[in-house]
Length: 95
Image (cartoon, rainbow, N blue to C red; front, side, top):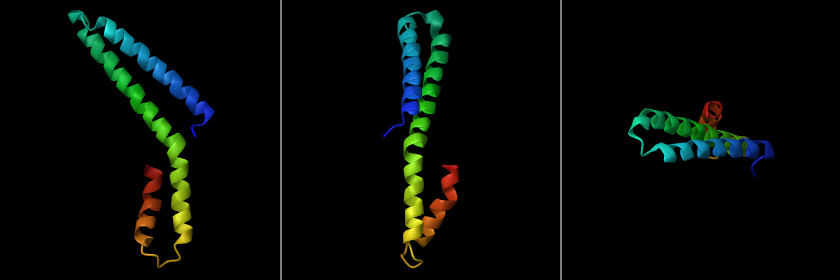
């Protein structure tokens, strides 16, 4: 489930991206606007990348942390996955 504050932020970002794409669509026939169109497309890409990361962080990071912690506590030391669990615990803050 997506938290309501994150839902609100995602909607704002998507509406902004849609507005920029609408502008691009209206200007695409004007050769003189090529540079501005490129800038707008880069801005849309940045918004979508940021929104994607926020969604992943907001919904999956907590779940992933819970799964790693559960696996760590469930493995008594001879489950065969010790190295994988430890590796995940070490790289998790970087994700």
